[in-house]
Image 1 (cartoon, rainbow, N blue to C red):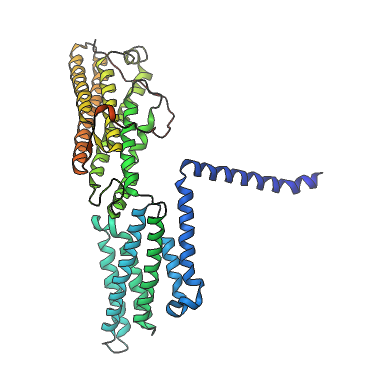
Image 2 (cartoon, one colour):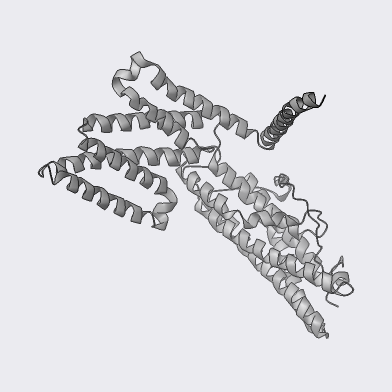
Amino acid sequence: MDNRNKKDSPTLSLNISICRLYKKLNELAKDDPRRVIHSIKVGLALSLASTFYFVGPLLACMFHERAMWSVVTVVLVMEFTVGGTLTKGLNRAFATLLASILGVGAHHLSVQFVDRVEPLALGFLVFLIAVSATFARFIPELRTRYDYGVMIFILTFCIVVLSSYQGEKLLMLAYQRFSTIAIGVVIALFTSILLFPFWAGEDLHRMTAYNLEKLATFMEANSTSFEGYKTVLNSKAIEDSLVNNARWEPGHGRFKFAHPWKQYTKIGALTRRCAYSMEVLHVFVTKANSQMPTELELRCRSDHSPCTELCIASSKVLKGLASSILSMTTCSTANYEHMAVATLASEQLKTSLLDTCSLSRVVHEATVISLLVEIVECVKQIVASVEELAVLAQFKNCEVSQRATVSPVVDVEAPHVAIAMDGQ
């Protein structure tokens, strides 16, 4: 019996691991079904690229073993979104073409020297190109959009130069390398654009609206979800990547070719600034409630205070902006009304501080009020930025009753602290 249990134990552990892996994969697929589609698209693109390597009689005489570069290219440039694939694909294709031309030129220049000097000349040219291209990568604008292309440029130039010194047919080498890479890029773009395309611009558009919705959730006094705004604080890297990829994408759906993607960066920066203020407010109120449970915490439960009105009005403004972005329509009348209520409430909060006699209450209330006023001012700037986006992107006008409903935000479970303070 003991020996049988020992034999069955590894099998049982393996079955448990397989079940856990299947459960994890199933959760990933349910969380975003596009992941399954993207995986199938990558497999299809690699199958198409492999055809150039498998079918010998057709293309072997043209590309030989270098047909493998088309497969490698598909693996390297195939991204989740169309913009990501375009960014890497075009960077790789143009960098390869430019490096091949310069590599051929470097070879013809080096052969003008005697045999002993030729290796030194080629080495110096490699050094010069590598230093110049690497230093250029530190330029912010170049690094943001063409960093991958610069790396491929350095690699291809070195390969062409080294191959030229080994006596290979240089022009044929450059032609075969560029052709196979171009084939890989075309296959990747064909698969990415024509088969269930996922656009970086659409993801950026939705993310901007949902981030505003998360801020609105924070400001709702009756909300049960409190810390959703924290995901906004870490959204800059994703936002920058989506903006860069969206700039490469052609016009699609409701987004024209010259869609103002850069304006989303401005809205995102203001959204994170507002989230930072909410983070400080959350930490302060939580800490203050633990230290003063009989005073500040009780005062933060009033239903008809200026603070409550400020939070509710700000929440409605942010929800209206999120709805406006999602539907690409302008409904500014309601936003102006709610913004006026929030501004009036902030002024009342400033005035209420003068009626406070206790020094400890002045310190705590002044901090909370200043943070709330800062949030209101930030919301005003967000309103102005969204209105600017509406003009640049030519949003349609609509009635308040026709506003789109914002989809639910990602579920973030955390206790909510209602921030409400009367002025008595």
